[in-house]
Amino acid sequence: MKGFTIVELIISIGIVSIIFSIGLASYRSSSSQYAEVRSAQTIAQVFREAQNMALSGLALNCTGNPADKPCAYGVYVDKSPSRILIFGDGVNGGPKNKKFSSGEDLKSFELEGEIVITDILIGNSSKNDANILFAPPNPLISFHPPPGTSVRVVITGGRSITITSGGSVDVD
Image (tube, one colour):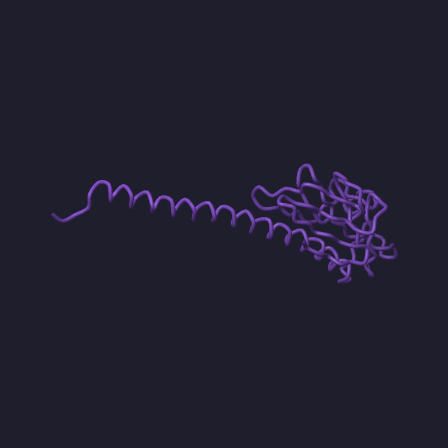
C-alpha cells in the first residue's frame, strides 16, 4: 500500500502549525520594535527640523513690523494625548510667551500605531508637556517650563529621545 496514514498526516500538520506559530509571534514582536525605532527617529527629526528652521534664516515675523525680532520656532510635546508639533511662538496673533498656544502650530507629527509618549522629563522633573524653543538666528535653545538643561521624551518600550540646551539630539 502506498500513501500516508492518518497519524502521519496529523503529526505533519502539527509540526507545520507549530513552526508557523513561532514565525508569526516573532514577526509581531519585531514589527512593534521597528515601530518604536521609527517613532523615536520621528521625534528626533522634529527637534532637528525646528532647529534647522531657526538656523536657516527663514524668519517668522509675528508682529508684521520688519524691525521687530523674529518669532522663535518651537517643538511642543504633549503626553496626553500623545502629540508632537512644530509651532511659531506668537504667530497668527498668539502670545509670544515661549510656549505653544492654540493656532500657533505649523506642522503636526504622528507616532506609529500603538506607540505613545509615556513620560517627558525636563531635567529630572516629570511633566505632562514641554516646549522646546529655538530662537533665530543663533538658535538659542530654551525649555518651558524651566529650569532644565535637557528634555527627555520617553515612548512605549522605554526608548528615549533627549535634546540638550546645547542643541544635541540623542536617541537611546
